[in-house]
Image (spheres, rainbow, N blue to C red):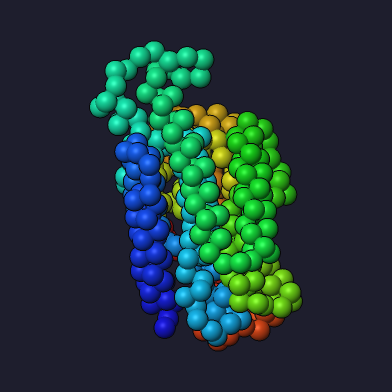
Length: 353
């Protein structure tokens, strides 16, 4: 199978496993409101997604073990469920009401509340009671997703895999915390890489590591595969930042959403280093301005391009992919998995969505 065929095959497998997993959980729920919670979670998780993390887990298992790959099917759900846990919490922190063209869990709960209860004034943290209800339940659903991830991983008896999974969640949260603070302060290039290696790359690394562990890989293979994953996933995030400011690409958010949120991307950091004082002021005036106009957003994007910051970010991402492929060669894994991970690395920097 080529790369696209592999993605299509395992997307179908994973979605089928997720449907069965959630149907069972909904059936076991003790009351109608809990069933509603799990139904919202189910619909959120099954609303698209590339499934790159669980597929990477399966392919890492196949990379070192030619036995029944079905053994990895339920455990691989763990990393997809953790990923979606972070997305639910991200949507709350970013106040996003849509993801992949559909309502976020927060938005679903707010709509449900307003259909069933009267609106009222809020308290210290919220303007109204419906927002407090929606945010509270969205946070809980994110927590539920993580718990469900542990349940999926518990299908196999591997303390080592569970330790990796737990560590990944801790590291991802460290990265998210760093990202929240970064919106309010200057960030160095080193700090940026430390942040995205934690927030984005850590779960890719854990996915590959858990798969290799389940396949009884040697420590040398695990080290090379995880180094591959770290570099490839770092490139993935840099590319994601570039897509956000590219009008011809389709990220699923409005153009320049990261600029409005004050995200300190590699491009912003580099532009603030390279641009003249006038252009630096334009960037800083618009960065983090939620009500900025399209004209203002485009002015910042023009500076990111003219300063050479976008070119620098693109070059850096490609260098990360080159390093990733060097580690992949050292891993000495099965031909099928090698070809998959080699093409996955290319996809990290060539994708347009």
